[in-house]
Amino acid sequence: MWDTARRRLKQLRDEFDPSTAALSRWLAIVSVCIVLVAVGGVSRYAVDMLRAQADAQGKSRALLIGAGARDELRRIDEATLVATIAESQQSPQRRAFLASLLNEGLTAGPGDPPGATVHLVPYSVFVAAPVDAFTSLHSAALADGRSAVQRIAKLDLYAASLPVFSSRGDVLALIEARVPAAEIDETTSRLVRRLSWTALVLGIIAVLAGIVLGELVARPVRELTHAAVRLGEGDFSTSIPPRGPAEVGVLARTMEDMRRNLVDLTGALRRHEAEAQSVLAGIVEGVYAVDKSRTIRYLNPQAARLLGVTPQEAVGRFCGDVLKPCAEHGRRPCEFNCPILHARLEGRSQAVERLQARGEPARTTVITSSGMAEGLQVQVIRDETELESVRRARDSVLANISHEFRTPLAAQLASIELLREGLSTVPLEQQQELVQSLERGTLRLTQLIDNLLESVRIESGQLAIRKQSVDLGGVIEEARALIGALLTQRRQTLDLAVPESLPGVEGDGPRLMQVFVNLLANASKFAPEGSTIRIGAEARDGRVAAWIEDEGPGLPAGDAASIFDRFHRGADEEPEPGGLGLGLWIVKSIVDRHGGTIVAARTADRRTRFTLTLPTETTA
Image (cartoon, rainbow, N blue to C red; front, top):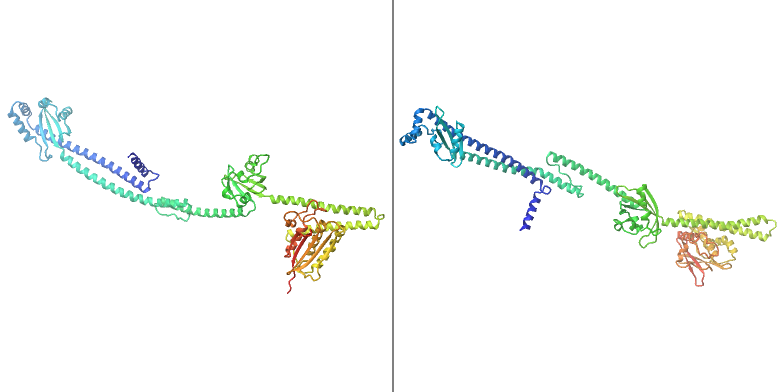
């Protein structure tokens, strides 16, 4: 039972809670309360005034009747009146005479209220009589000396007392006038009932008017509230109804202007967001944003791929736990060298860190951090792992170029000094050897320079292939002539097996000659001194296959295709310096542009063979 009562009280409290009750209900309640208070107050005041006026009227009637009786007594001779009053106390005949006198001369007149009576009370009788309802009235009249009037509730009448004095000032008697209060009270009750009915009707009218007024005022406010709720939920297509009173109309127009401004602003923000998302998704660098506690709040796709996570996994986590920077001296850079914290003090900061993504090798990155803005701090991650590899390769290539150029140049310089010092004394055979050494050095420098220039052309896309008919046998002969000095130096022989009926190929003659020059130079470098290098070619199903074999140590262990990579160099035990690692890369690039293929393999008789195939020329 108590639980039911508490729930009911809570329900009533919620119904009359200003924060939950409807505006129309409150307007109706307030209007009704104001009208009821006003009508009730006026009614109460009017009833009080009516009762006071009725009371005054009853008292006035009693006084008028008493005053009239006193005037009648004044017409009687004073001596006769005194004697009659005195004798009435002892003689029944005198008492009858006095009663007759009172009935004839002191009764109420025809204009007085029905039931009104007048009594003459001798003063001696009043003094000797016990206390009754009229005692206080007569006492007040004697004290006043003129009159007194009261309503005697027990007898439901109005009574007036007027003392009668002798010429010497002695009190002879008291005139007691009585007027019934029923008629006056009935008149007052009728007026009160009419006033109550009037108040009730006005109250009902006020209730109806309050409900109608509340609905008229609350309906546009309710519509504005619903529209505001939809706007708050992001539905900017909702129009604001401009109905209602002047103030509500002004509010509705203001909200409509606000809605249009929000639509324009939202559209602009979405366009800017789309542009920003496009920029962040299109740039190469990774971008992420953190808050004051260095918790990630945004991560673009590039940063997610770099860190090996998804944006959903990263958002809400500490940035150090997502980036996973490699420890330095047993401590994470987040603890002592964080670019985010440095940027908050300096406005901008940059640091090089090695990040260890999940299941990936460590990558070298450059993290640039901006200052804090609107509670967020943006960082840009640039992956420089490949760039670092390129830098190392560049340094290695420059060192190799310097070494490769220095060796033949030093040999040529020594040959030139010997020729200059012993030009007249050195035998002719030695002079020829010195000249041949100069030729070999020059040829090697020329080949290095050609490979570098060809590498630049290939990398920049300037290597153009001219399509024309090429005699592959002639190309091989030219390459043999160019490489002859190297073969002679190493006492190597060249075994040609190229048929005269070999069909022509479609391609660029000088580029194909460069292919064979690089392959022959590579074979000469790796083949032992005094060995034989074999060149062969044949037609195969619309293509021409050519191969070069040497008796070198063979291919590197593992993937044989890696020898065609750029800057790939042979093992340290090569018979000659390793070179720049560009020769075979250039060969593969030229062959690929001719639509051909090149592979390297180890033959059954333990020889290294490079086989290339080229399409034959098309006939019209």
